[in-house]
Length: 453
Image (cartoon, one colour):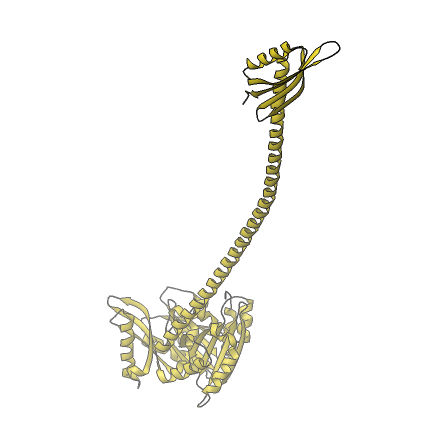
């Protein structure tokens, strides 16, 4: 999902096709090619699909059509609107080609503009020939991101060589690859015109013809420098052609690092990955038909929705995991609280039982204390000639039985109780005189109410 995308460059030649596949972060390169002729489209599509493999849905695809199947032109047109410029370019091409306006695919690049006018570079190809190429790519399960000319590969190479020089001078870059020589005129980083020809024994002749063409079509442009890449070793020397200085370099010398150089040596077409890296397509032609553009837009939306769905699923999964973790923690806390509550409930029951025991003991002791107080008070009021033998306190009713030396002592004790605030209604329930050897003993029984609350 987050790795660098694979890039597939599909080149169509007059009688063959070639695919270069640049995979993954290490940018490993594989290449495959095959014949292309009448009735071989289905086989070519199958071979291309097998070569790209199951990851073709997420593969960025660049389709290159041969320069010989296209026409290029440069005009100054009275408009700045892109739609109007395309319509004007179609009208210009329809005057010089057998194609009618509905039978051609046109793209324009605005080089510069002035008041109400634009200098544009235009590319045109027939829709029938273009559709044959796109059908093969579509049957292979690929959706082109860009459909352009194979000479467009010169753009990133020119940026590697010269950068964006703004001195206004014209510079010509040539690339010898697969038996053909592609030439482009560059001014301020823009390719004004290009041409591709079969490489003859003398590359100088092709370059000289191209220089003359540039001087004729762009008389205000001063061409002072040319660089040929990948020409045969026999011609690898600095020389002058048509009055300009021509340099020769190996294509691999433009590689940014050792890995890129190794990839280019393995497959010279691998440097086309630069086109989709944002280095060349900003100023390149795109001859994609409207159906391809719509399909490209649908794929972008599908890619966006698919990744949003993955992100949403990850978010929901994370939220569910966090929620499950939080729920487990809450359930654990509840279980801990229940255990603590059960333990504390047992403690509460123990405390309540102890409180009941204490209350019972207190109630028991309260009765004993009351009786002891009452008995102590009676003992203070009891005359010296009398003694208590039995005392009972029940429901605040006291029953007292004792023995006295005389009846007068009993009456004195009864009078003392009647005058006390703590005792009320003292009455004599019985008296019994019993003589002894030395004196007369009186046994008495008193009943009275305790005045204590």
